[in-house]
Amino acid sequence: MPLTNQSIERAYTLAKERYAAVGVDTNAAIQRLASLPISVHCWQGDDVGGFENSDQEIGGGLAVTGSYPGKARTPDELRADLEKAFSLIPGQHRLNLHASYADYEGPRVERDELAPEHFQTWIDWAKEQSLGLDFNPTYFAHDKAADGFTLSHEVGAIQQFWIDHGVACRKIGAAMGEAVGSPCITNIWIPDGMKDTPIDRRGPRERLAAALDEIFAEPLDPSFNLDAVECKLFGLGSESYVVGSHEFYLGYAISRKKLLCLDAGHFHPTEVISDKISSVLQYIDRLLLHVSRGVRWDSDHVITLNDELQAIAHELVRGDYLDRVHLGLDFFDASINRVAAWVIGTRCMIKALLLAMVEPTECLREYEATGDFTSRLAMLEEAKTSPSGAVWDYYCLQSQVPVGEAWLQVVRQYEKDVLSRR
Ligand code: RNT
Ligand code: ZN
Image 1 (cartoon, rainbow, N blue to C red):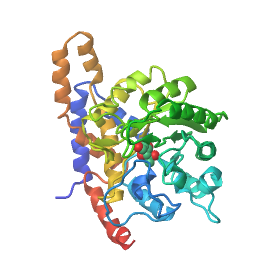
Image 2: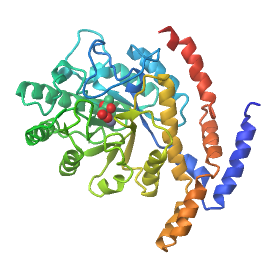
Image 3: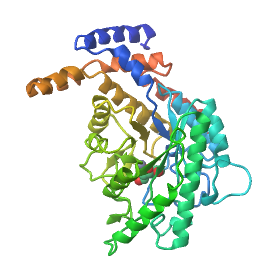
Image 4: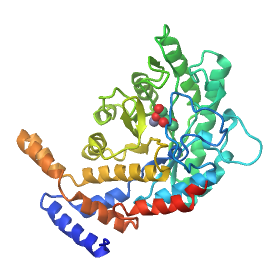
């Protein structure tokens, strides 16, 4: 029997009562949820390919596996796929672009010469779709990054090229932020590192710090652009040493008043970012998260509603950090339908936030404050089977997006009509 709006509403009414009994206002939770944008990464749509040069290897220690048909080959295709994905996700969100996705007519410009005009189609489209924009310089998939070094390169001319790219990208970010009326986060991640034990760990780090200082030399209006730096522990081919490590960027971000970007897949396999949030926010104003899912050596599986995703969302809500933390996604899977990957991951992120918002946090806090850890544990476990699904369904209904797995049918139809013809 198909689900009717009435049954979704009835289930919600019961759930609302159930939550009210433990002091949780589900209407308020839904309202709060609707105001939270997620920055959806463009690169899930085409396996981090970008539109510069289809023969170029991605490199940078990044690997995208799978050969599912139908990936976007042009900016128009990518935008169409994104529109489809956004139509299946409740709420108003953002798009996170990489510099390698420039879209313009005329002769190709090098990355150090990129300018806002090369992203005008993206800006126009984002305005039309009411999407905020975020941005990233691209320090991979390029001849000048082929030896594994960019901003920390010891050859001055190559390092300078990448510094100029960073400078250009901040200006693009600021133009995006100004155009769409919400600050753009321009996030720097570089692949620099070594496969085997380096002798000189110090030199590249000194060069990186100096290069970043040059990139950030010009102050930009924070209502247009905010700078972030992203750390990583290791990549494919940089197993022994990554120049931009966690300690490097934590220190950099604190001393230079920048945003730190924590990517959930960039740490030791059992190390989690949920526990880092309240530590780094002691010393840093704003945090950017790349919500991702590490599996063994891969840092970028599609996120699922697992313990860590829930722990991240709980930390943000319990700690009242949502106005200081920008939520971005970072995963790429070429072995499943790419539009579905966006929808699955983004819906999971929102579900995790919803679960955190319907937690009886006040009551749990009280138990903790009085040393009643028995009740705290009991309550946390009972909360896991509270009727959050009914609240989620109702939120989807209200947001005019498919309820439950109904979205999959829409993606299947799109696959048939559009993706399979590519
Ligand atoms: C790489 C970083 C980085 C990239 C994107 C494509 O390990 O996570 O954020 O995934 O810039
Ligand atoms: Zn990342």
